[in-house]
Length: 78
Image (cartoon, rainbow, N blue to C red; front, side):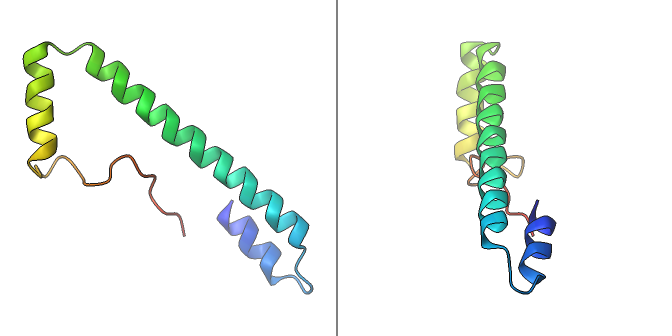
């Protein structure tokens, strides 16, 4: 979608209505992906034992290399 927005920007004059629609579509997709990620994480946590959940919390809070800070944010697209 970002490439489509970029193409629209290069038109002269730029079609701002189409740009706005593409941005809205892009944000809707990002929002849905973010939610689905959270849903998958919760579903995964639900099958863990209490000891495994505690270990997960410890690993997530320790800065362990397998856990990135800000995991709940979607990666930026260029």
